Image (cartoon, rainbow, N blue to C red; front, side, top):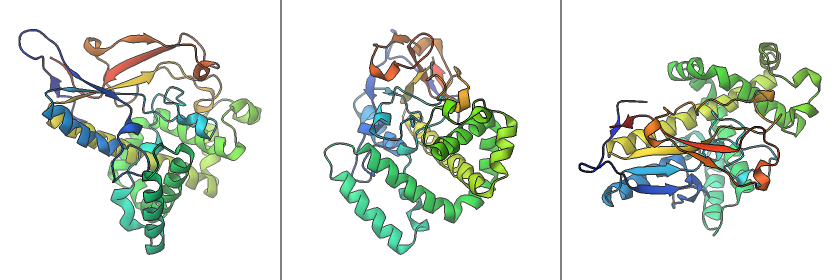
Length: 296
């Protein structure tokens, strides 16, 4: 991502105006039951026409813990790096599906888009179903591509642990690593080697990384589109994660990996003591940061 983007003040006095919105609310007729990263482009055009220059997003990280509707809250992230698979736009890959799968996609898309509220569980399940089918077609070639290799090299510090966590979460039908047995409580390179040496588990790990790569590309493309219109994008992210539920016990407090933290637009916001944070450790704080670029 180009980090040379600069958001400049209006006139002599530095001020900026914009909108705060969750990605899941940016629903269009081209979506799949929920807003997607690609919808940022449509919002950016509206923001520019309205004379505004900032879009602030609610957290966009993966929240899959309970594997049901309880994961729909964006404030219970399982990683400060991994993006939520539910925001993946599958439309660019529809031609990779068989004719029968394309018909199923169109049917499910129409049914989900017709709902007045997001059906989180069905939307996510359907997206994973079609993402899996797309992976079978282009997964191998994608993972062998130079772009993916660059993505992996730059992000393997979190990507390997995250992918392993997802596979073990699904294997044991629980996100609590304390229930996986002593062997899997803490992530290590030996666990990575063990999982990737099993062909079936290795394919599941590759699927997780494949989806994260596509999400990275789509969010990057959307943000660069916003920048081309002179619109900055901020995102709220959690600096505290849930105890024993994340990246195999590794509590990561780093920035979301695509963000460049700038003090000009960074704030610390205390959270209410809601059910979303009953099992957190440390101070309950949110942070906001620009996705690429900086303030003039």
